[in-house]
Image 1: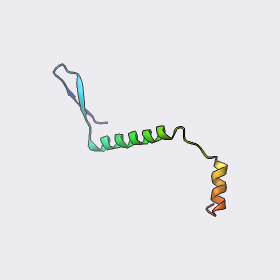
Image 2: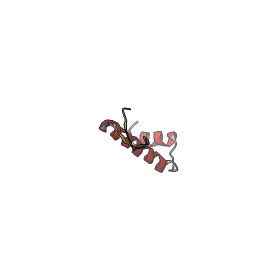
Image 3: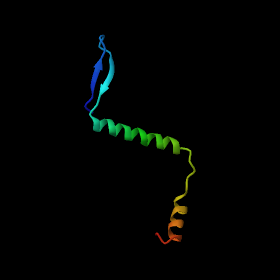
Image 4: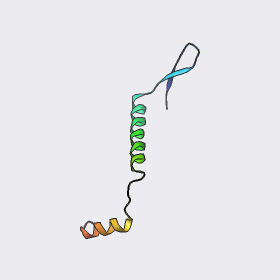
Length: 60
């Protein structure tokens, strides 16, 4: 990551500058993590059930 920092008069970091591509990748990662968090307690389906449905629909 090629970040640059903006500091105040005391030298404390107050902001960061990132290349746009890295910023967009971070946003994508954040969205993915939010999706995972939302689905954490979602009901699951067993692999056997999925396979059966695929076979029943001639998809496997």
